Image (cartoon, rainbow, N blue to C red; front, side, top):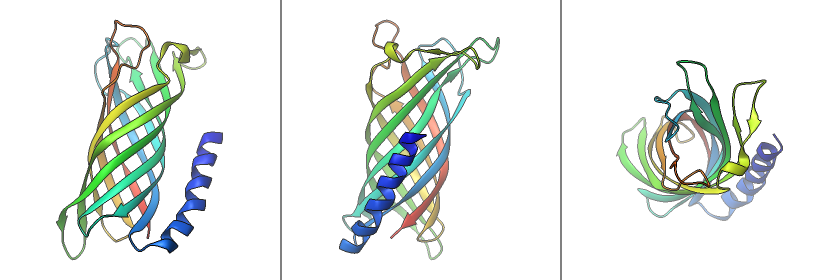
Length: 194
């Protein structure tokens, strides 16, 4: 919770002054749900439900292209559902750097595409179901990398929905084998401040 407060405070403090400096700079808040899976854990399916919450800032390079950086707190992992054997909970601070580009624009809405990498810092890793969970943070790399593909539908200049598919390109585990990579789908809402 302290990380969430720190992220939110930083975004709110920086957003006001940045918006005053340039008409090309904006930002906002992002909240969404995640369905994730870890390849290599022997459990099939996007059965782990998590969340993503944070903020973003963007710089318009032109009417159609922008650079966007985000700071997000995410919860993802995997879950075995057939035997209720276990669950892997991974909490991260993610920092994606995305190229945002216009795909379609009408009088009422805009559709934007997003693509780019991120660096992620692991906050905690736990295995098992509550109350029988064990801290496994030492088994995982502290930093990992991912690639994101997504789109945003803006209903107004300030409100929109987004969908994003993400895949890691680094091994999550310190030991090899197995090779653990995660991929997940995120869907949620955005509020722009510009």
